[in-house]
Image (cartoon, rainbow, N blue to C red):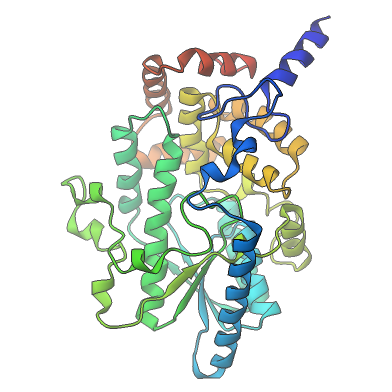
Length: 382
């Protein structure tokens, strides 16, 4: 009887098509067991991503690659690739360097919070592919300030803290990569965002956006110095030089998560088992993920992976099991503990302080009952 009761609860708690559940931010599950994100997926994109739009952008990407190849001999580098050591950027680097034969410059940004597995993947991939590679290493204080500002000032019932931090951090990393391309006169920057990473941009950061500084408004405050601000993309720094285009080819190419991992492992670019995003993600993902689980009852990546599943390129049963095991471990500080401890030491905030902040904010959330019911269902201590 007890097992039957749990099974009935599970059948009504999770969306039948993805891994969203009751209590997730912006998620409602209808009487048919299907969540609103599955019913209206286009509502949660910046632009509706139709098959026609994907085909249009795929053809555009092929034209870009032909154009690059036509001028291949006239440049030291055909393009810059933002390279993190994760499965997707490794796969993109492999496809462009090997399949298309481009002269690529792989550019990595070491924030000081990179995962050690990702760092080792970078070394192995670069060695085996023999491509040119550079590390940009801003002072760790720049990224530390970025994270501290958000932790201190975060006050939202509608977005996980990690989304805000990751968006801000990604823009800074993109800025550094674009600046490197602009300095060298390289016209194209390719970034390996997977199809689910499309909440803000699809296929390309708009040209008009890159015609202006990417410096966020809150970086103009006294919390940051002019030395901190200099790392951001500002087109005025490069005068009349042509601005690079920044594109996300994996948004429009055929994509299968398992095949991506299998490809980079078969090519000897990453050791077997080391392409798993749970092992390569920045340590911020698990430290701030701890806050979000204690604050909102789920990890932000649950919503993101649900997109992959919705697009038919992610395994629902696999990821449902992963997140159901992962979220309690992350909340209790029992996942990737050593590297998460390094995060707290570097940022100057303790684990207990972060958790207490999450609990305090949760008390004033109008969704508190839904959040806490979801936490109890998954066995997460309040």
